[in-house]
Length: 211
Image 1 (cartoon, rainbow, N blue to C red):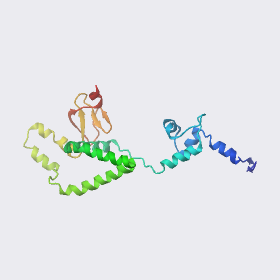
Image 2 (image 1 turned 45 degrees about the vertical axis):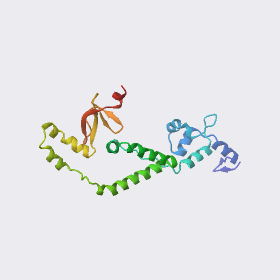
Image 3 (image 1 turned 180 degrees about the horizontal axis):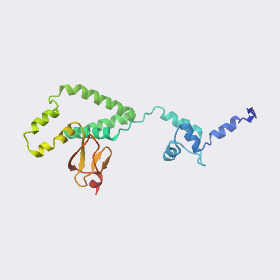
Image 4 (image 1 turned 180 degrees about the vertical axis):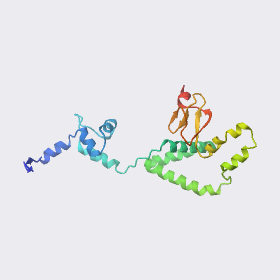
């Protein structure tokens, strides 16, 4: 057996034996993944009967995921603004929203999900930018809204902050049963985040809806 720096060097057969039986810590080190991630994603690799990993399985996994792109995760503020914009749009276009969803589903089924969704997002943005200048209805600014509301009742005047927040997608739905407000992916108690406005209590949270 050859030696390197006075230490015995493994033969090819011995090296292959080691690579065919790697423990979880070594696999995590090779993939730059934590051991909890390996335990939570057992379907990524076929393990040996004794629970060890074959290095060849790791190369297959790396090769299959090399071209995949993980979608970015929106923070709660961006998530809430996008949710409100889409919800308002769906109410406006009615049944066309379901048709639009079907078209997206067909495109995603035909090709990669992340790549296709990214292309759809860019397409939607480009089309909105192209169409917006030709819309007949001009946007109403806050000054115009205030002028119109000054002639109305006290209740309507007090609602101005909500109208501005609605226009700027900063109006948070409030559950009419429990009083919690939605921000991003969850319904929360207490004060709304700075820069956001609570809507009138007319929505319903997931817990109250299922209760």
